[in-house]
Amino acid sequence: MPGRVEGKVALVTGGASGLGAASARMLVREGARVAITDINEEQGQALAKELGEAARFWRLDVTREEDWKSVVDAVLATFGRLDVVVNNAGIGIVKDVESLSIEEWRRVHAVNLDGVFLGCKHGIRGMRQCGARGSIINMSSVAGLVGVAAFPAYSSSKGGVRLLTKSVALHCAQKGYGIRCNSIHPVFVETPMVEALASLSGSATEGKARMAKGIPIGRLGEPEEVAYAVVYLASDESRLMTGSELVLDGGLTAM
Image (cartoon, rainbow, N blue to C red; front, side):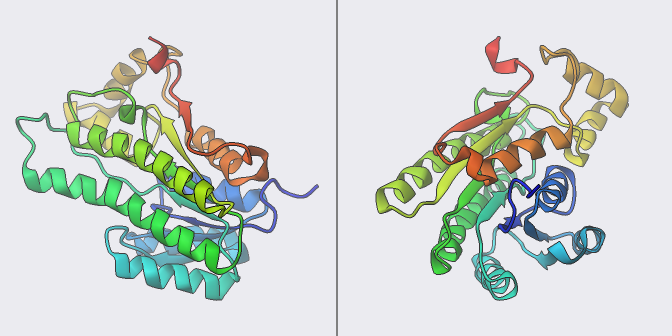
């Protein structure tokens, strides 16, 4: 049986670990070739080696437009096409609005929002260059749907990703490009970022237990659960879906 994304080429940012690595693994498993991108070269190269001939690694700082230009061109030269861009790279700083510096605010937005803007811009360019009907998948968060007092910059940037996604979707539809754009909104997931967040108060185990209590289903998400959503949006199964949010929050926003 062919895979769900057989023959497609996907570029994943922040692909060396966490949700990006889980997405890269599942996309390869379902038949795609994957460009793993990250600033963590050691982990990115190791994952590409693990996944074999279907994957390659490129260093990409998502805040630098020159990086985007060169990496998209290299992916097209290497794989011959670009069908999927997963804008997954992101950072978070746990400080409230009174404690956060303007430099920290700008850094979070540079990675989480500027990086997604550049990924959409150059993803569209790459897809149009090879005539592909493509899918852009922007990793937002449940924090892009509801406010969180402890990390206003993260919430603001992820809320921006939500509406940027809708703007890009409408632009592509109006231009007749055949390129879709959707956002994914996970709750806390077992990733290195959440591990670090949970450790701020001491014990990571206790921190994650407190996080889980705030989720109606009573547990954190697993990276593979988000990766399944990525594969769905990357595949032709979701061809009617654009400008939408795929919410994976364990019931949090139903409260």
